[in-house]
Structures are given as C-alpha cells and as structure tokens.
Image (cartoon, rainbow, N blue to C red; front, side):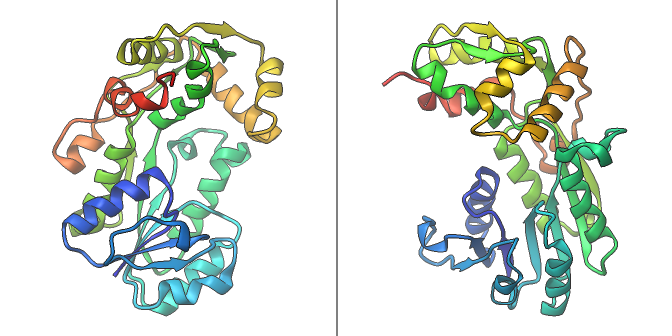
Length: 279
C-alpha cells in the first residue's frame, strides 16, 4: 500500500493517476478527505501532517509513502511510520536545500529539516529536489485574465521551471523501481528562462497580450502581503535578485528517471491555458 500525502496537490494528483493506472494499491491522505475527488476504488483518509493523532490510521498497512515536506511534527511521523512497517519514503523536497545559506533560509530550511529527520531514521528515503515549479506562474493568472500587468521586481531573474507532470513521473519511477531507492535527485525543466521569457511564451500560447510592471521589492511585498508571509517573501526576493540575469543550471534527471525529456514551459502553459484566458 502506497500512501500519498497532500492529496489536493498538483503533483500528488498526477502521481495518483499514474499509480492507479498501473494497478498499484494506493491511499490518499488529506486534511479534508471528504473533499477529494478520487476513483471509486481509491480510499481517502484523514491526515494532517501537523497532527500526530491522525498518523496511525493513515499509516496502517502502508509500506511506501509519498511525503510533502512539512517539518513541524516530522519526528512523530517518522516514529509512527517505522512502527507501522513503512519501509520506503519518497520525499518531495526542494533544490533550495543545496544552496550555501539553506539553513538560514526559511523556505529551504523547512525542507532541509525534513530531509535531515528522514535520513537519520531507519526508513529508506529517496529525495526528489525539484527546482522552480512551472506552476508558480499560476500566480499571474488573475492579472492576465483581468487584462492587468504582471508585477515583477526582477523580470530578468532566471529559473528552471519544471512541469508537475514530470515531477509526478519521477516520483512514480522512484516509488516503483528499486534501483532508485535511497537516491537524491535534482529535477529541473529543460531550460533556464527569465520571468520575461516565461511571460512571452505564455502570451503566445494563450494569444493574449501580457505586459510587465517592474516594481520594487517593497511594492511587490505589499501586493503579496495577504498571500506570502514577510520572511518567505524576503527569501524569494533574495533568490530572484541573486539570479537576475544569471542562467541557472539544469539537469537531465527527469529524462534519466522517466525515459522522456522534461517538458518545456510552453507545454505547461498550453496545459493550463484556460486558467489565463479571459472569460
């Protein structure tokens, strides 16, 4: 039995489809299991990674776990997973842990803490470290649909947008192929793109003119104040500033795990075009 955590997440949703299609037994954990739209033969279970009381029932009979990096009660989760007989955890971490200042970066540290707890445990642990999710571009959907400019403090900042489908396919590979067990895999898209280049590709796919408003750090933080806590906003801004005009290194790990090349950002844009098209 494979337990998927973060049942409403884009990666878990894609991974569920792959596991179900392969006929593998899978259970989906979520804070609100009744709200999940699952195949009739896939059970949902209440699981809050911040509430250890939900761990035993969710882990009962489970041998493998696909785990989102939630650090608050990771020690309790590891203990309960080992007690339940879990033998393998695939962690969705972040390539941010590879940075020199990861321990002081609130975004990276949350992933680093979970990695450390799992690697110190008796559980076999495989770590996926994606770079920038292509789905981060979904934050531009509202202004694009409203015909407003996208506010960017560093439009020339590079990232390595990776499609959630590629992450799910990589997760499927490491869950099902023992050769990959125990590895650490950095996942990226096929090319380094600036935000401006991503917006240009998105505009071409959705056939909608998209303009960029170059804002200051402070202006962007004010716009995002209701969505991103200040410390996390600062961490993002620092990362973007450090990559302004500087291409990032990409990998071919997706291809080595899945057998197919990573999907370009334009494919992600086409897959999600409806989210950006004015109604």
